[in-house]
Image (tube, rainbow, N blue to C red; front, side, top):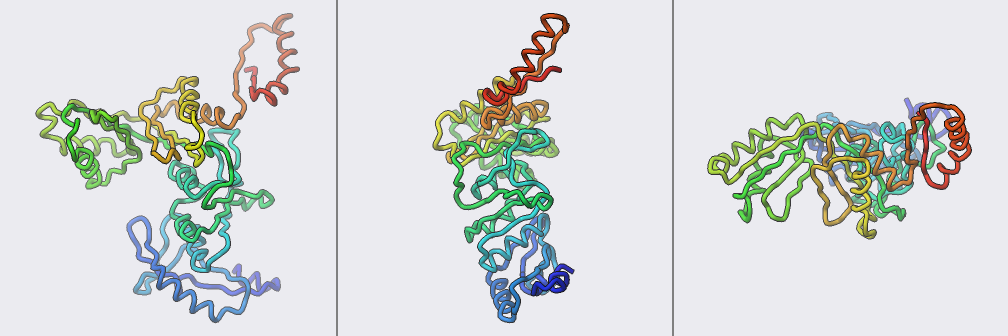
Length: 370
């Protein structure tokens, strides 16, 4: 239909059924692209192309046996990235319903801003931790060929959107924050773990065998304890699996505790430039401390691209707003309750009205009378 419309309006266009050139091997949750065969079949099709415009069907492909299949979840965006690589495109644009990649979920942080420029790694981290604008699988073909990806808004095409590329040109320390709710924290403690090789291998190997997805890992250098975050729905299975894997150690008192804390969330700060700026972690944890958010576990890789913390689910929104305000200088909202609006209270309200705009613009403080 789109191809017919373009031709009807005088724009010469051809259409390509992706099943005739794109070959994939379907898996349980994703597909593996046969790049060599797909590139050869695409090159053959391009030999007959006589138009400047091509409309290609998204989301579908064929198996090596020629059976039609799909590209699974987020398959349409994945199609764009695949054909961007096959056609050696200069850029890929994903048209969606938001203005770009945001510094936080706007439903939780109204002051969230659109990020103009992020790296592939930053976008991947934010996507993993809940930013649903672009799926990590979508970026993979673009990353291999270093093709920039633009995220733009179908309903607001005048906005430039977000550019995702190999290296971000932004100097901002932290690009964005994201939370993942519905987590459980499992803590395994015992003196019998100290200095014993292979404990982590046994632990996570047992969890892998039963299909438990480990989202975050934290271990003290003393090796006395290992804690890890998993989806809350798998908490009971994880506990049983760990108890079974270390039955002997538990029986002999070498492992003293397997503790599961439910109703947790993971809060992550993401940014390539964190490694070049001392004090980022201090500022992050200071903001959480001022907001009276209790931190249950911390994880940070040596690349310093991501700082992750496990917090109580009830503190998730408050924590996200606190760290976003600390780094993005968004308005620190302070609620004020006034009892009595007589001479003193009324005068105070008049003073407040006269100073609110100055406080908001110059000091980023947003005073609200409730």
